[in-house]
Image (cartoon, rainbow, N blue to C red):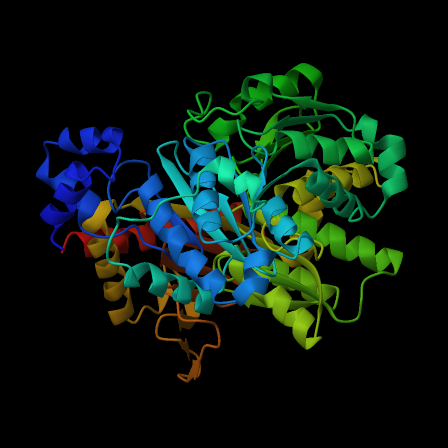
Length: 580
């Protein structure tokens, strides 16, 4: 079917509601029509994400219907047992999230599949927990995480609570693609879904056991109960799903001095108080900083709309506030958990942490110091969850902590995705422990880690490349880099080059190549002698290509200079490639 045929179908056929048809008939730009209909919104290994609008390459209820029908057919492949095990559905505060969640639920019930739908917005990690807790076959969460307000998304989870693995994702995709027609997918009426018992509304009966498991992760529950009130915290859910559970988790442990940013407390799909709701961005903490200064807070916390990412700002000894990077948060949590578990005698001999190849090499050094194994996986928390499952099934390690530099963290064995509620609790306890027991703040701890292992400094750059032409330019950049043998960036020698698409690693010192064992992915990683790297990859969730920088030096000023030079070299090369 041509682009124009697709456009005519969607703008004329009565299967599509009047709102959709009017929206499409009002488009006068042929390029806009092409971008909306030249392809179907891509169903990747995690699901969908796109701009909310009418069209096959956009997020709307008809795309939700078609994708959910593909998922339903895969669930039905598991027979009556799989259909009765059912699918859990959660959603965040974004525009149309409740409507999309209900649409998915009713398509599933129309296929005679049991559905557990949350009664209100819930964090993504609780969806992961619920799939495991209810022994469901699959899960869906409607969210676009930290993307701009114009986006929404649809993530699929499987029976272990992790994002749907590649093999199963390909099976779902095959079912979606096998259905050529957009017509004829009719959701079950909600009254019938409830009457037949196929649709069950859930809420507090999942919240309570989830929070109980979160509390079990505390290493010093007595200290939390006795002194938690002395740690002054400002928290903002950024208009998202973390508001209730983050506050409850902290309060139930004893952190009673939690001040919520009132302007950002309640759901707001417009995210009117922030440029966009990403806790990586300093602007998202603007209001939290004002609250912090008013009460002299020790700690500022922010979670994104689906509460799987955590941003952190600390009060400096001088009384100002400084934001931590995702790598710094990951290092502090890694160091706290490993050092305190060792001190308490509860760090197992086969202890293992899992991190992504985009995350700081400092974590590898810290883990080795505590005789803890490190597993490096591809970018994306689903790979951390998959590795954790592999460890459990094969019995070769005990998971302690996992993190990625993009503000995602996980401890415990009851969730299979990054979890900002868990991260908030552990970070608050770490801040309290160092404050009350050692008389230090988290900056002091971070500085001591740098002095022991070296000053690692990280940064990122992104190029936003939208639409069809953007995809083509990203492919050209990656191909150009592959074809050039780069031996150094600035004056930093590269000792290893990893191409995860070709699954080849080359050691420049020996000249030898070896196979990479991780799954195929369009990622290039250049490792420096002595630590640090440059990595390039197109984003799997946003229309941009991302550049990761990590350097190691003996002092912070030296690291800053080295990082600046490396970035200038890399981005200069990219400018030259784009000008060809």
